[in-house]
Picture 1 (spheres, rainbow, N blue to C red):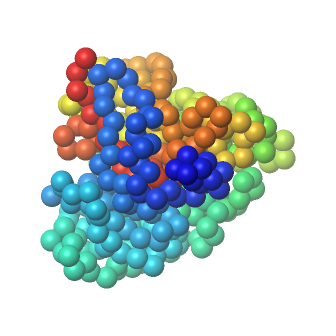
Picture 2 (picture 1 turned 90 degrees about the horizontal axis):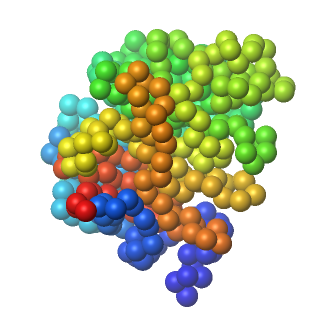
Length: 362
């Protein structure tokens, strides 16, 4: 019966009951010397994650419309906000939790001291498009202290107003000083900064060009205003047959192609000290998995190693098993986050779980 429910959920791509996470983790694989375990299996539709100063793990959701707080050492999270529109993104800054909800941003003030009686979400002034197609947002604070907010394309392929859509913006904590940092970004649901303060992000490639193109992308912003090509160019090399007005050479090329339809979402640089030294500075990326490819791909966490100049060194698998033989889907990784102890957290919106990967030695 359990296997039948897992197969049904995989076909429908709907969240699984939390109790399944314990059985799922037994079928996941990580490199020798690492161990993966369930941190919590009670976070329905878990998406982006952020850590508070006191160690609280905050988790957004999409379909669930809720924001969760998981205290250190606990397994059951608290709901600290509900009834929001796709509150996928969460970002912690100076005691406050910022939440994205499609067209608005909200803030929960001094949240860690009010977990048992959370304040009402306070709407910030900026307003964004209301379309839900690529409307959910991963958000994060940069080393400049500004809040970075993406706005996806309201379509699979189209040419929307570039100042309103398909870009990555930043603003002051009060929503003022809003500006576009990167153009031509179809849909980024994960970004982070390297040790030199450079902004990197994943971007999902367009659909309906076949099973094997274009790649999802790993990109680096060199200067504010960089254009990454959408809708003219895909994966740095494929000119769109309908929308190309300039050649691919006119745009910033990706640092790495991640594979077609893998749905690369959350990404983080490994900044902890718990993993072996060769992992420091590597990029970990959660691949949510394909939804319309003839054979499924993704459903895993990959490791990207970079050269000193920021070019691609190699890519490899780090955690897999959410996609089983016979295309049985056990979960869908949505975000990764380096925990205070240096372990790597992985959210899974299908299983409603947070997994922890730590190094235990060979």
